[in-house]
View 1 (cartoon, rainbow, N blue to C red):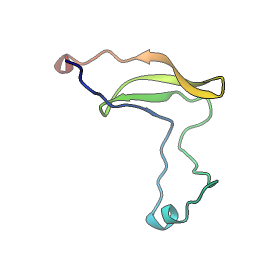
View 2 (cartoon, rainbow, N blue to C red):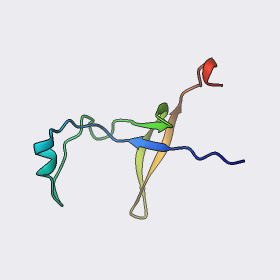
View 3 (cartoon, rainbow, N blue to C red):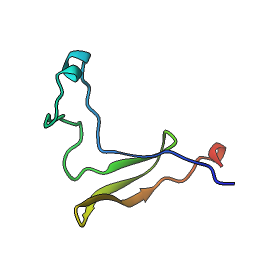
View 4 (cartoon, rainbow, N blue to C red):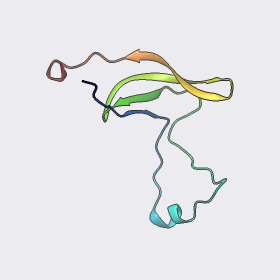
Length: 76
């Protein structure tokens, strides 16, 4: 039986109030809390499982995994 999981790559975070959110439009730029070249977090079902770096293949974004966290004993 296959189980669906949610895999998320987090580039960074930004705080924005509802007024700022309602002012967003196509072309708006949101400044994140990460610098260019910083590792991105790889999350599986809400838990950080590793880190990676953003790569581009034929104009498509991808993530090269650079670190995998060992699962905690209670997660096994």
